[in-house]
Image 1 (cartoon, rainbow, N blue to C red):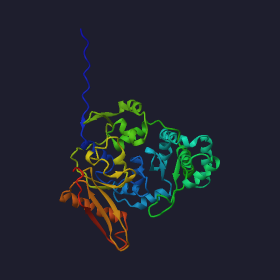
Image 2 (tube, rainbow, N blue to C red):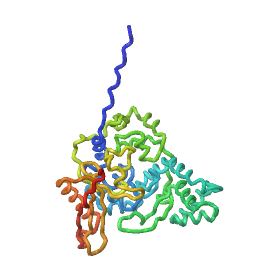
Image 3 (cartoon, rainbow, N blue to C red):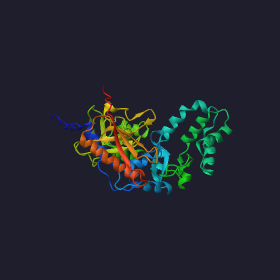
Image 4 (tube, helix red, strand yellow):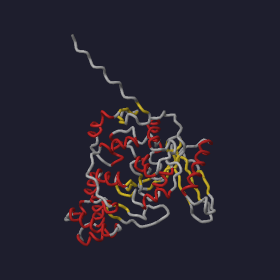
Amino acid sequence: MPAKKKPSAAPAAVLSPRALGRATLERQLLLRRTAMSAQDAVRHLVGLQAQNTKPPYYQLFARLEGFRPAELAALMESREVLRIVTLRSTLHTHTADDALTLRPLVQEARDRELRIFRKGLVGVDLARLRDLAKAYVEEAPRTPGEIRGHLLAEWPDADPQALGTAARCLLPLVQVTPRGVWGKSGQVALTTAEHWLGRPSAPVPAPDATVLRYLAAFGPASVKDMQTWAGLTRLREVFERLRPRLVTFRDEDGVELFDLPDAPRPDEDTPAPPRFLPEFDNVLLGHADRARVIPPRFKGRNGVGNQAYGSVLVDGFLAAIWRLEATHPDVPTTVTVQELRPFTAAERDDVTDEAAALLSVMTTATTDGRGYDVRFAPFIDFDR
């Protein structure tokens, strides 16, 4: 009697860019503001992109109910969150616990970055460089220029930029406050995370837990999506190890997507209110395929090289860029919105309301007598 054939597995459901976008926006706290604390939000989002000092505050304003910049500023000053180079070799604001675990996890990417500068480090003992730099920045926070000068005295023939990069790659360097504190200013000064927090970094963790956290905040996602977000490689085997705990889908191009079984995946027609995001918001950078948030025809429209603009999401997708202007004490603070596609009258009203809310919380426009204004720049048809 012939053996019975095992029933074949049902094909994975296909998710459209719109469905993927709604799922990610839900997990990014962008479908509705939540009452979550700033610290819990930083933890849930696995950090906030912080290449500039103000974007983390704008990221939380877009996501949290009743957020005020002073809440994150207080966490910075109490060292419960901090600014450190982690994901994609860029500065992020992380909780103290995440800084001590994620930084060792992404050391592989720092090692790759260091190899780019190897020609400028001929004859440099990297172990000694690490020890010298560590002792120097733990004696007192140092500027990047001071670190380069200190190391150049030991290796005068080396490239100064390469020496500074080596210190940053070999050590978990934190930008100390007041840098990054809302309403305060300060030059970049660095010390180690261990010294700043008074406790050691964790041993290099297995990436499994970070994969699950990434999916909770950015899923459904492919292996390549997470590798792009983290700046890591060779994560396929980790996803395969976790496969029994995950569910899978496909995008419209057939790429396999992984997700947590109980994670929210709202209907693709779920309303998505307008949101003003700062430059380099992680929801725009957290995937290799960004069509779930950035329509392909607008790819690159919210930035050129290292210059990026604020992004306006309308109906869950990039639809405009924005800038804040406060040029003179007697002139109203202005948000200028440059549409990437024509808005309907209702969309303009909703965007105007969101801009006004941003101005009332994130600027002094309502307290210093200047007032504020919301302007729409003329639509430019980029498809012509």
